Image (cartoon, rainbow, N blue to C red; front, side):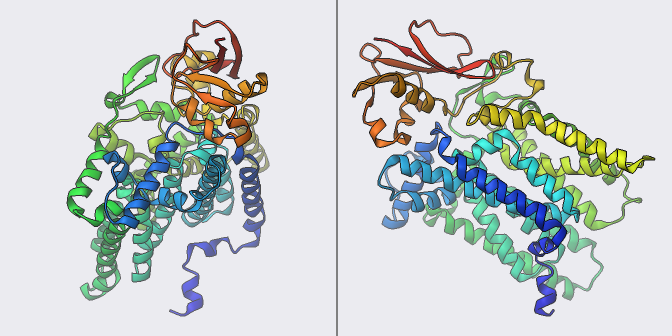
Amino acid sequence: MSPSSYLKTIPYQIFIQKSSLAALAGLYVLIFLTGILVYRDYGVSWDEFEQIGIGAANYQMIVQREPPKVHYTTLYYGPFFELILYGLSSQQPDSSLLYLRRHFLTFIAAFSGLLAFGVLIRYITKKRWLAFWGVLFLFLSPRIFADSFYNSKDIPFMAFFIVGCLTQIWFLDSPSLLKAVLHGIICATAIATRISALILPVLTLIFLEFTLLLKRQEWRIKLQQYVFPGVLFILVVVGGIVLFYPILWTMTWQNFRIILQLMRHYPWDGGNLYLGQIISATRVPWHYIPVWVAITTPPLYVLLLLIGSGTVAARLGKIRQFPDLTQRRNDLLLLSWSFLPWLVVVLMGSELYDGWRHLYFIYPGLLLLVLEGLNSLSNLKIPYPRLKKALLGFMIVGGLVGPVSFMVRNHPFENLYFNFLAGSSMAEIKQNFDMDYWGLAYRKGLEAILDQDSREHILFASDNPPGRLNLPILPPEQRKRLEYTSNLQTANYYLVGYLYHPGEYPFPGEVYSLVVDGAKILTVFRLR
């Protein structure tokens, strides 16, 4: 194969078409500029300090070649992206700059996932206009947008998973040794970010075997085209996992078993406010994920998801009308990306909490089904094509007005988005579902205290750790005026959130409340 013809097989070549470059490039520029403008606005999440510890502990283990004395889960949690963040942000001269650098780099990871998602859509659908809408839908998903700045767990993993899906389908289309190495490295980095990515190499090997069995070729050719690349892929994945997981450098198999055990059952027995009741994270019902997806995804996407899922299922059921093996394989992969992780979680009885963030990585797959629904509607045969285009345009624009309005109106709390399926008002929703489970609102509470009180030394207390965890992101001149205390008898102010506590608090002296669409998510009380 000549170099020019080989380059044509690379997925990125699909963007070298003038008609698609303008709109999509403009959208990417808009997304990037938006991220640059808003990344400083978000608070420190509940888990962010611990995430820094994961990066620091693994960095120390690499340098000292022995596990540091930390909680055992720290070294078994996916270290790959946290090592990157630690290496690029730990040398900041001030804690506020450290957190802002982390938020910026997390956004860069999310933006990279958006780039890969556009390529994946175009590669699968062969339709340029669907790539534009798919990227826009992912960008205008309020909860995903907000988490793209402070959630260094789930959003970078989602980005790695998108790239893994892209290299997976590229590898399966025409296996080669080079593609095996590339896909293997991507799978290993995704697994070293979150162990749930094990589903990627498993699916790759399953579909590679199916292709091997269905192809009518001599075994010599099959060995060269499928078996050798498959074996090399396995070796690269295994080697990459060990390389990117410092804890696996010693007692590899024993430590890997612990990682798998933590994936199945993470040692956390907290609760979730779900459908108006506090339920244990260890006993979530099977419908927990579908309900959370339905109530936190824009209604337009939910409608198109139902249409798209039906379209793919119907196509798979009509094998004779759709004999294309590649199309059937892609449909099965798409359903696997979208629903298989949820089924695995249900079957294993794994802990779930904080909404459905642990399964954010299935969201791009769900959006691909959304695009299947949109494509199905565009293919409907009606007498007036212009009317069809106008109705589709009206539906899309009308469906985006609600989530965009919420994002603009409630920035930087896009993570609190719910649609009408969750309730008629945010005050009602607050009684049934967890709201600010990241604790981001506490930053606004601290800033409100500083704005209202000019004293040089102010003692504050909070009902949850994010009250003090948000102190380091404040500028030094503001931070030095505040001191955290756990003693309400000496505190000047008391910050309270409404996680697990949807009702009002019995304290007098309310001086500030952060309200999102009529629901309080944080209140500051003056104690003395």
